[in-house]
Image 1 (cartoon, rainbow, N blue to C red):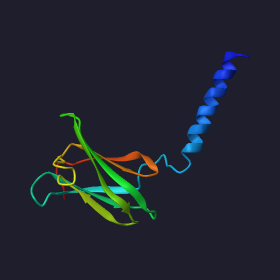
Image 2 (image 1 turned 45 degrees about the vertical axis):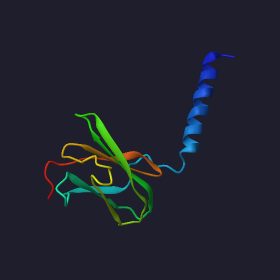
Image 3 (image 1 turned 180 degrees about the vertical axis):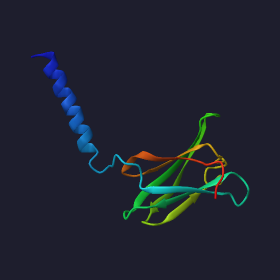
Image 4 (image 1 turned 90 degrees about the vertical axis):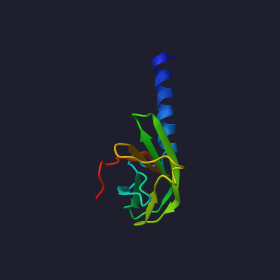
Length: 125
């Protein structure tokens, strides 16, 4: 048997397995809007996540990253975010990691392995 055909069959099998296992996932980021407000305690920013879709989102997770200081934190914001609903995450939910302007925020939800990415602005309005 030709080694090229064997390699081609293996590649096809892997591709088929990936496609079939991902039937319930979307290549699009979680359908949310991300906004910010100043913390009521004067400690960093609060991330405001709103489900903009007509579908329920489950296991909504927020990851904050500071690439300059090479630090990050993650938190499960909620188990269930109904359509049109909002959840807020700040330093207290992040277990004392303080979201600051210029840092990157990633929002994940079940069925959406690609994150919604946002950068915390230098000023919130």
